[in-house]
Image (cartoon, rainbow, N blue to C red):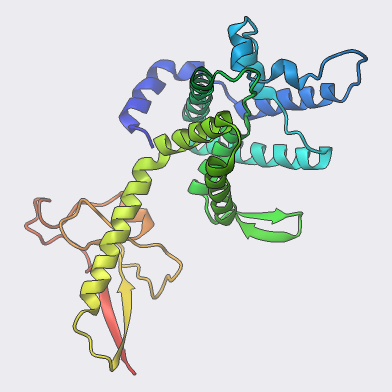
Length: 301
């Protein structure tokens, strides 16, 4: 997440201006546009061409496109459109309940303004008129944020096949990567970058921390296995220093190693960010309280 103290200061000053139920407002606007698009008016231009974000049109005075492009609905049949809105509602409301209204507004605002900036930068760089920016990647960043926070949440595809959302997020990342390579428009690539920037500003620090913890865990396993003869089968047992929970009694728990502690100190998710730092540099002389971070159990083969 971005600097929490900065967000807290901003929330204390600007929190009263946060828009509650923003997801519902965005969906309501899209539904209205979706219905209007299906009203056939003789001689009228397609509504999508009037509301989409087209940078050169905005510079010609059509400023409303800066706002209306947020309400450009998914161009699909009503059943799939309803499903898309339902997923967006579910995830947006959950994020707002998890982060709070202000921080959810900030997340969407970062994606919105970065999308505008990237769209205009791309237009100035290429000079190609008439290119329309999509809001799909902006709303895709809501999906990626939800998948990051709730990776084991299950969706029923076609109301039949259960699948964890982390696998759908992986497919989304692959699609984003392919889009960056194969897209025929630099504006499309710019929209992908805007969505990724939005996501990284909120989760980049956690991603780096998890990578460091994973590296420390691999180093510990390598040291633990070093010197064991071929007649043994090694089994690493991780154990939380605070509560004693271990990977044998709770095999689905994801244990992590604290990067601020001076040794290989392992913690369960509940205590990873809620413990007194131990080891070298923590003021306890290298001997922190609690149980060892992990043990090595060996079974004769």
